[in-house]
Length: 179
Image: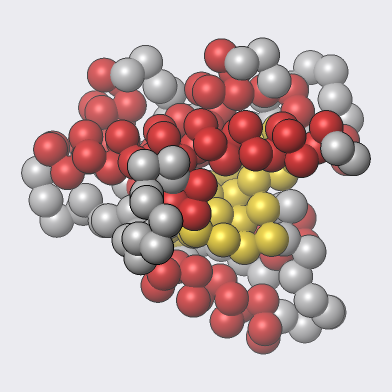
């Protein structure tokens, strides 16, 4: 579901952010919901268009995993979207495409190279590139997939996503104020 959450900015003025994981039922909808929650809390939700997608099509049309919904509810976060698969058109539509792990990043970069119609407009990077708790030189850039684990894995992922999304929001706001 594409949810612009805006009353004041035209679509062309918004910063478009797409969060991507494998199936779009755990990590990326959690990142989408957390980012929207943080933007709303900061009073800047009208500056963003936020969505999530998966590199695979296994869960298209499904709600997020119940464990992702439970951890989101625990922190007062709504998960607004239904699963969808990332498309080549997303590479032109979004300003930033934020991958949850290196496998997702590789898939997105490959899609960008194979895309007909020129280079990708979107800047593609890993969510944890913005994680302030990741020490310099730390190569743990991935948000681990909690799908095959228990609820505690979702709590751990929530904490990583929250830290990283908060830092990403600050960075995007700082960059947009310099334009």
